[in-house]
Amino acid sequence: MIILSFCLCLLVFVAIGVLSVLKNHHTNVDYLIAGHSVRPWLVALSAVATNNSGYMFVGMIGYTYMVGLSSVWLMVGWIVGDFIASLFIHKKLRIITQEQGVLSFAGVLSQWHGNNYKLLRLIGGIITIVFLGTYAAAQLNAGSKALHTLFGWDYAAGAMIGAVMVVLYCVAGGIRASIWTDAAQSFVMFAAMAILCVVSINTVGGISEISDALDEVSPSYMQLFPEATIVFPWLFIIGWVVAGFGVIGQPHIMVRFMAMDQPKHMNKIRIYYYSWYIGFYCLTIMAGLAAKLLLPETTNFDAELALPALAQLLLPEILVGLVLAGLFAATMSTADSQILSCTAAVTRDFTFGKKYSYLVTKLSTLLITLAALLIALYGSNSVFDLVLIAWSALACSFGPLLVLLTAGVRPSQTLSIITVITGLAAMLLWRYFELNFLVYEVAPGMLAGFVPFMTYYGITTIRRKVHRVL
Image (cartoon, helix red, strand yellow):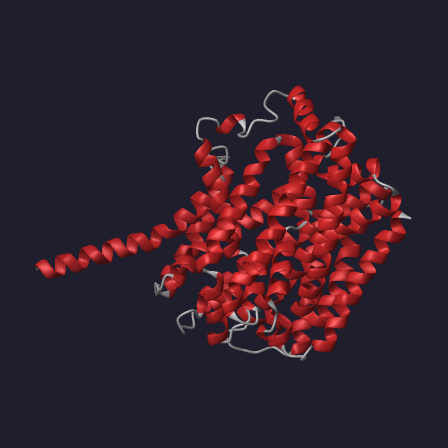
């Protein structure tokens, strides 16, 4: 029964994605940004489903299981930062995308003011492929972990199933297929998490009982801040707010806003988006806390498998299949978007003006999916680590430059490239020296990204003053 309900849900997703071919105009513009025709509610549900990926279903529940209540700051920071970014970035990005006629995220950055920064576009495309490819692999990895826990299947099975499904509907309808399936998947994701959360709380005896029981597990488990951050709690919070702001550097999420029908609909999108986002995040944290009480921590226990293990322990088989389908929905709703963003990078950012055919664009999707599958099979097994590294790298690479462009700054190609590389390098060094106990790596990475511009601005100002004096 588990397999039956699971397979039925997945077949519905594939069918919805394939049906999008009925709206397909068979052009690269339609394949990569849906011809700027996506309605607000679809943009919102697709963006939030893409954001709430295997990281939320597998990584976030596992993280809450391990650290306790302090995981709530990831929710607060991520959502607050995301909201701040949406106030002045998303609408402008949509306008510039159509004005410049570009189809990739790096393309928008390189042609923001009507320039044609080919080297910047190439570097942006490389960063997109390297880190989004890793990010997509993490999603396939999340599905593999779930199937391994529930059915005892080999780890490769889930990744292969996810990859095949993504290819089927992405090749059929491109970004529109991804958005349509995201909307359907978002409902299954929310329903699956809500059912599991309610049943978990009732099994324990209620929310107050969970709090009391967790206090007995560990004195620090229900503290609002991890012990390592008690000295600098606000720095800890600010770090996650900046991480949420880093959504502006995520091509697979921002392409949803590039594809929306009218820039004026941004307020409607926010209402749909943040209502769903907050609700789902709260359910995820509650499920993680309940799992700590219901699933004993043993030597070989993998915290990232808490969700499927909890479902198998508490739910009837038909609902276990629904939860697993919800997890797969989360992974696919992100993986398909990332693969299509990588497709845009390969066919638009590496071409130096040459326009590839619609068929070549589709073939690129197949090859990128294969590459992500190989990374999932032979790379790191930690969904949480893979997602955070990729998110941080993209945020620190593209975020500072996008902020400057939105503010009306016209940096040269050289300054733009230095901004991108500085942000990425600072983030990687911060992680390498294990300084995240002070503040999450996106904050120092993004701040470092602004240093080249501030230095250039300062030197230019001094030169002007000296010239006036002379």
